[in-house]
Picture 1 (cartoon, rainbow, N blue to C red):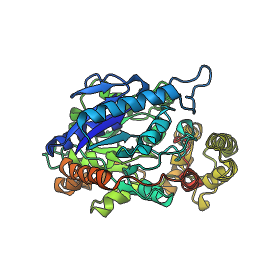
Picture 2 (cartoon, one colour; picture 1 turned 135 degrees about the horizontal axis):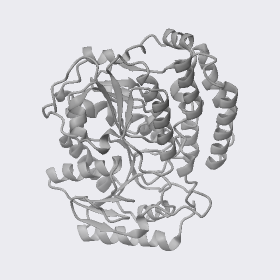
Picture 3 (cartoon, rainbow, N blue to C red; picture 1 turned 180 degrees about the horizontal axis):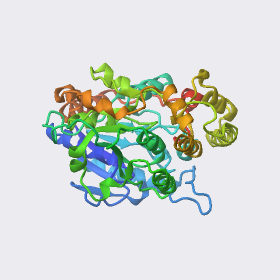
Length: 469
């Protein structure tokens, strides 16, 4: 058994981190593995072959998005490069492709379909699904028939199976260094609530600023890194400006001048406000470093951890915004336009309408709109109201009794014990990979998921968040 790992690039990020740990886990088992990338890998240890045809597409001039039609010559180059590398490894080589369904390279799906049709053992490792409110990277091309699928959470795995992909494996990411001593003794009292993230939109930074307005005196929220994608930077910079203008105890870019280890050592706990995650590393990595996790509970990923015996008692499901805190009419108009435009990109105008989504968020069963479902403009209006209207702040606390001095929960919480993370160790990950590859070699793949079914499962009002599209 040998493995060829394929990805568009090896730049710093979540997928590249998983690939590193994948290589380490396979090495522990004595399984030979090689990497094929669309770009040269700076700072990536190990031998990497490069095929430029695998790299991201360039956006079309003046349109800001990549094409959705394959280039036959580019697809042929991808097929040739993968076959060359796989054949050099040996006949029993499994081709493991990361995130192929995200439309970053319009020739990828066509190339993978050709490889699957030729009988190549193929694993398609899904970290994100474009059907999940990501119209900018959705491809209308068919998915390959005859591949195995791997999903990093049970929700996505179940959705793929329901859509007809029978060969689906639940493959949770490995957690770094479980079982190792914690980086520093945990202190109690006011202090740093660390958000160890790159500040992209789905991390919901507006909610981090909101929570900073309700910490104990002496506490502060710290966000580690700015986004890399230039399209994300204006949103990040806008939240920096809002935080400064409202004198919120929140810092941005802490990781630009300090090490992550040092920030963890200083922190009282980790805060997560993200509204969408593939795996949910922000709930587990703090435990491996001796820190508890506070913040927003994600119903698609946290149950995976709870089924394994972990508990996160300081998470909240929503933050209710009473009426009158933001311009709901303007918000409804913006959301209606965004959703209807997204439906056209998906080619599915009838799945759900913008008006339905806006109504779902604003009505919220009378409980008040969830702050995490609002877009940036509405969130900023809520913050302005809280800071400048004392009665509004009191009403907000009444609607969310947990929120005043919410960071006190860090004093009484202990992180999960290190041994509770054994299910996500590199050893466990390697064993899962080996079983998956053996299945690919012995049984081959199966039918592709039906894209219409996936769209109907994901494009629901309850799955929409204003900062997640």
